[in-house]
Amino acid sequence: MNPFRKRMNTDQKESAEPANAEAEDHAPQAKYELVDASTWKLASKVLAESKELQEKAARRQAEFDNYRKRLEREKSDAVKYANTTLLEELLPVIDNFELGLAAADSASDAKSIAMGMKMVKSQLDKFIEESGMSPIDAVGREFDPNLHEAISHKESHEHPDGTVIEQSRKGYKMGDRLIRPATVIVAKTPGASK
Image (cartoon, rainbow, N blue to C red; front, side, top):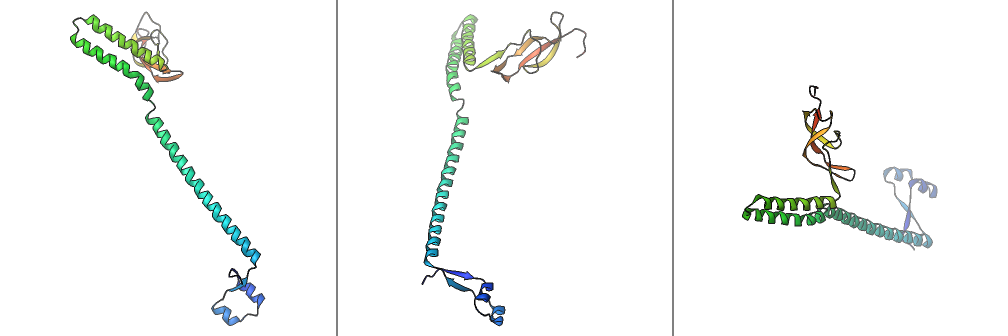
């Protein structure tokens, strides 16, 4: 005899055997019928497969969580150390600048100090160029609000209205992307209103 039994509802009870109306009103009793061996085997097999699938799903979920955490960690590290190579290339420039400062303390003439500063400037220009940045050449060009930031206007007879006549700070681009606008002074026709 198989212990796995199927519960019958009260409607099935009524059709299976005569009902006692008084007993049903007070406490319905569940009746069970025996399930044959093939149904029992099938149910056991389905239950085993279900447990196996649940375990596989749990493993896949754990693998996915580990993968997601690893990606987040790698992304965080990439952001954290993104400028490492760039900064390593800048270190020789800093070294030469410090050597120049030390030499300036013992130098007797301004020409040697100026020459050391020009060497450091040249090294910085090379570093910027190798990094993919290029300076914005603003003087003599028409004012472009996409590349220039005007800090003032200056009356000029020599330059057309809207032409950049002075640059107080260089601007830089990397490819088509603006890194920093050039800070400029723009010419205006004498007597014209702002």
